Length: 338
Ligand code: NDP
Ligand code: MG
Image (cartoon, rainbow, N blue to C red; front, side, top):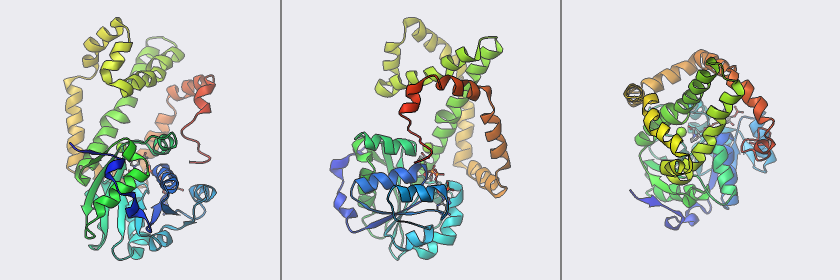
């Protein structure tokens, strides 16, 4: 598989082009600030009166509503919540898109599942950073970057891939690696990863371990350190040098327990469930459920969010983290600014 880096890109292709970042949230603030520091001409489209509108102004951007920003830009970058993109596209973006404009996404959901169908003169591409928005900003500021996927959906101009590459490099991805994919592959693997492993899998694993210890009479503080806090320390070692690197660092006892007990926790049944989750992504069932949930004003989502926020692990964690001052000193998420 070919991996692209900064040397493979032509940053000059963005010269003279105005980029509108629509939505100054997790990804939006990161893209806007990284692009600006890479010398690209950026404006922001946000909801007038919202907190994020003010944050973008405070960061020094020209900020307008989504429609006005679209009308004034050559490349329109849709960094709105996936569930709102279809509605905002139809109302504010589509009517204002210049002839031959470029439309960019950071996730393939709305194109792949047909929620947005752009006009045929519009170039459609994706630059999907493989990390949370706050890290896209944080890594760039450290001189690094988060890897990204690029994909080309529609290319009447003939140079959409060059534009995508230059954009990916301008947000820092060219320092880490850029891989070309399709909207279908990105959408399906991204949803699967966040559901089965990164967000769903890991939080369910941490909570189940925590509950098992607390229900057996161990203190919540012990359970928190063991099952949640230490996860990061272990993942840091895996991130740095793979699973083998982590196993090199832990004791032989831990490694033996890992190799013999891990497969008893994540079993063939778990993998069957993972396959089922993947099928629901591939056949559109998950997308339909999520779109309908939003049309109904998110009753299930709100209830689950509330229940999760009330889990005792959150209260114990808040208390323990307040004693570890260094964690707060270098926060990646600062809700007053990003
Ligand atoms: P966020 O929810 O963090 O940000 C969306 C922003 O859009 C918010 O600032 C929101 O404002 C704003 N917004 C809402 N309605 C309007 C409107 N009518 N006009 C203008 N702005 C509006 O989204 P994410 O950054 O999480 O996601 C953006 C895209 O990036 C999605 O496609 C997602 O899949 C993709 N992505 C996200 C990743 C992530 O790390 N979060 C990782 C990779 C891809 P307000 O909050 O004031 O309502
Ligand atoms: Mg993801």
